[in-house]
Length: 127
Image (cartoon, rainbow, N blue to C red; front, side):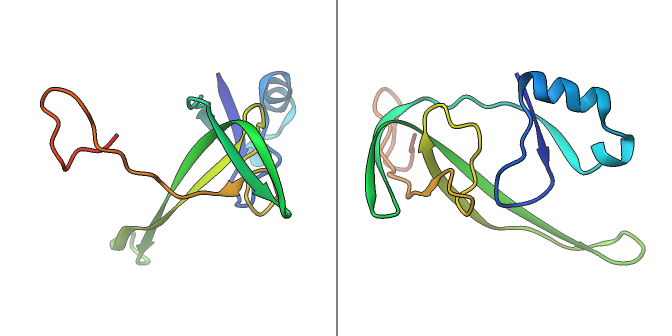
């Protein structure tokens, strides 16, 4: 249900299940301060083809959207700037726990916006 993730980019070193439990039991408070405990998200799987190192890999895949936030504060804690500078959409094969593109666990992807169908849908609603 949870994942313990190190506060760094690039993927790798996430703890799940029994590894997560062992980490919580054995790490010092200082070591735990380098991690964040998060709910594990289970996105729906779709058939897709990924291209990695020039080879096509077809099968069930999941897509993950990462939204980046930035905040800049002054010495007194006053917020000087706060915003969302960008996002990254990545896709990986089903069953892969890690998600880093640079680490080779996932591939960059692009969204395909599809109009919502059904009652009350308008041309500005997307799913």
